Image 1 (cartoon, rainbow, N blue to C red):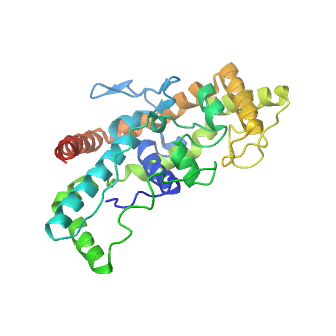
Image 2 (cartoon, helix red, strand yellow):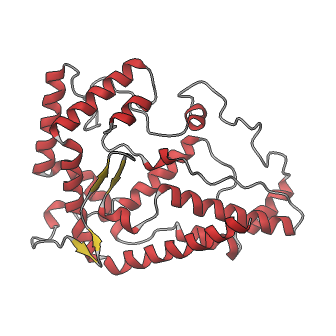
Image 3 (tube, rainbow, N blue to C red):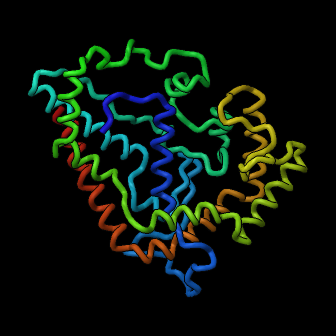
Length: 299
């Protein structure tokens, strides 16, 4: 349940949670099944899909969990339900508006991978101008509409809010965002081991060779795909030019598609193994989304 619209730093945390869900991967590479993995399960693709127009990188497990905007919609519906409950008890609560900006469809994949991302954000994660301001990345007022809502609620009011947040009308949306299952540990292993795979190693080596040839060098910290000097919290002309040079090398070497294909291949056995649970979870999410849209339409 989300009442106060967090600063984009909170948004980033939410995204991180989603990342844990979307990269439902495999066991360690050594334990991956040796047989050929199907290209589909339940009619759903097990391949990677890159959309340069939107900036989205869709991996197999992404198709079984909520997108960032769906996550925000469910959280907003939860807040609206809490607000309705609180109003019945004499407390006025202002829920946030759902996010609709398509910028949140875009995502980095080992750094920016489209020219649009590089030109607009450099190495900063794509986000709205208000969120950039809230994170202190650009100048501006995080909340152009004035002070944050609900700032005048008393401690007693918040007790009412907390009680309403625990009611079924709200928790049905929160529950859809809750992910529990043994596949999440396996997912983390895949994410951590992508560059243990020979094909991913080759893609990274080609990218780093391109960086060296372009004279921009390779990041020496734990940031594969990033060139030397990249800064994920600054947008200026120098960072934009560096990001554009990075994207050019990624396009020349087909780095993003090659690595995404590896991660998709490593995810696939786990998707197949837990297909029943993942399909069931996606159905739960879809049901909650239908209820959320209906609630917001009425509200």
